[in-house]
Image 1 (cartoon, one colour):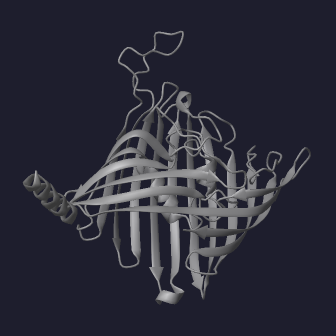
Image 2 (cartoon, rainbow, N blue to C red):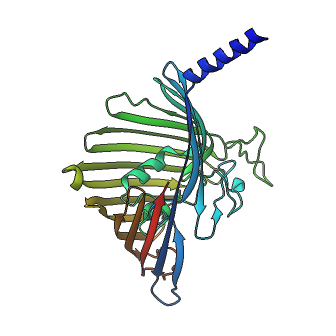
Image 3 (tube, one colour):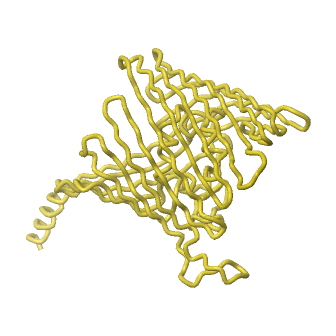
Amino acid sequence: MKKYLIAMAAATAAGGALAQSSVTLFGVVDASVIYTRGSGDGSAHKTQLGNSGNMFSRLGFRGTEDLGGGLSASFWLEMGLQNDSGTGFPSNSNNQASGNGTPGVMSFNRRSTVSLAGPFGEVRMGRDYVPAFWNTAIFDPFGTGGGIGANQIYFSGLGGLVAPTGTRASNSVGYFLPASLGGFYGQVMYAMGENDSTSVLPGTQVSNKHDGQHTGARFGYQSGGFNVAIATGRTRYASGDLRVTNLGAAYTFGPSLMNLKLTSELYKESKGSTDAKGVLVGFQLPIGPGEIKASYARYRLEPLNAVLEPTTSKLALGYVHNLSKRTAVYGTIARISNKNGATQALAGAITRPNRASSGVEFGMRHMF
């Protein structure tokens, strides 16, 4: 018995030395006061306490285990928070509208993955960002936070927040290239709608076995201050496939304390008989403990055989002042202009066709 205990202790010690692991609790809490207004008869304005004006509020857990031989295993569980009301966000079980969860319920909707990494790259499985989302997130000075400066292309698009795979896909298997490729990077993803082979649309004989199936890829190159990437994705729906392609580029130059970053993105998507195109240009300019950022985005719907093509333009200007490495206060002003029948408005406002919407936002963000 004593020999057995000694052997077990030795094995445990050896395993501990080989399989070093760590678990991290992390998150963001972001709240802001927002005032938005529309214009024209029947328009409406709104004052509200929002969340995620600078960064999306979240709570997460992640961990990594060293398996030896250059291999590591990791997990990542991350949920979105609406800290203005103390509620969460729903997830999606099948990449289809029928799989959307219950609003307000806490879920690991942002990311829920397990992965194996090594010299070959990384294989990741679970709910994760689709490749085409990354260009929108990285090359927009405001990111994709829910504030009034957020990317108009992302929030107004056919794919944006409308499609279940506009940002993330459930039931996915992804592969990421290793970091040792001289500046080249990339990923591919396949996500399943999880329908059986005999599945048909209700009340019809039309097969929907591929409904919710997503494939996507993103490849780029980064060297010095230059970064460029192209991404594409396709989600198969019984009502018509959603296709998204975007190209993003950025260049950062100047000394480290004054590094002006110029960004741009070209965006195209289609679903059924409607195409859409967009373009965004912007910059980020650190000044002392703060940062000025601005963007201009233009988005146009192109319905087949339509007389008019609804077009929306958005201009946003913001400032973030860092009180510490983890805490910041910020302010943003934005304005949307519509033409050809478009009615887009800033968060909570209502505006008439071909009229404008404007707003202002002040908030605070803390990371932990």
